[in-house]
Image 1 (cartoon, rainbow over the protein chains, first blue to last red):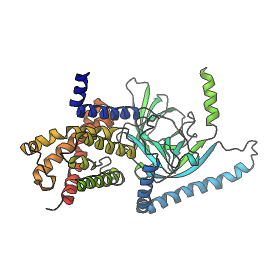
Image 2 (cartoon, rainbow over the protein chains, first blue to last red):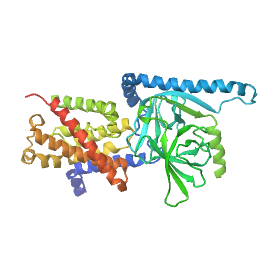
Image 3 (cartoon, rainbow over the protein chains, first blue to last red):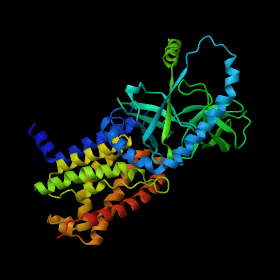
Length: 271
Length: 167
């Protein structure tokens, strides 16, 4: 016993180092699995408050760009409204509850240079934001809500090795899963696209309807180049994003009102 | 003694805030962000309790991790740096360190630069190993380590020289 105690006292620095380094390693490994970075994340009042203060100063630097983006978006929306009023007024739908709810949010922290990127936004539990809600911007898809606190949330960006999102070709409906290889914040990869797809450079990629998180048909990017993967059965497509992740300021959170029902239904299938 | 304590606490908070608000959103050439918070570990008093040093370094790293949503990579790299600092000190300063008489305030530029370069490089190497966590991407790890180290070394040296106490 005496010897063990002596050993501990003699090597206390090394033992403390091992303990702390082990702790850091455990947190790192844990953060590499999807939705497992609960303890150390920027969705809390300390980090949110600091980022909020910084953002309230920093947002003045690109007001002009953000205004241009919003005007551009208004233009698109107005076009849609004008063209849709005539068509929809004739249809008398029996159930008029909305399937998707939309909530705007401001980006407090943005990152795009790490291998798993997160955004911090100024909406949280009090705005009834919860895990697995989708996040988009006016140009296209951004990511998925990861952790929430009362006032803030972190968003797992699609620029992350952990994220896999169902996406498809707009023209031919061939679907694949969207991943990121960590190289450039302007490009993502669409994997496992069937060889039967009639691919052309410049084709648009949109979200597929297979996941419950995003509605069908949200813009992602265009085909930049494509090649067959090793097995030769599928294509891997290099997708150029519509979104410029380096200048993200305003985003929208999408809530699927049917999410709970859908999950319950799918859980029944597993039994 | 109390003077040194206050200086270290201020340094801790100031470096943390500068790191997360400015330095982590520089993204020079797309991905290069300097990690200047290691100045705290570089300049921590040499005679202080080593256990306290390890715990301070760990907490600093963990707070940076919390702000940057990076799991525990900064905590790991900081603890490593804090533990290995005597080796770097010995390597750069030799006998001066053996007599525990180093004053960071009045070091020559060459020695200071060498010490910062050595610590920054090893810190960033551990940092990117943990962040990328894939030994097959060793080239990417080395590339990021090299470029980020250069920026960190330049910035850290400038900051330390600017804020060093006057004699």
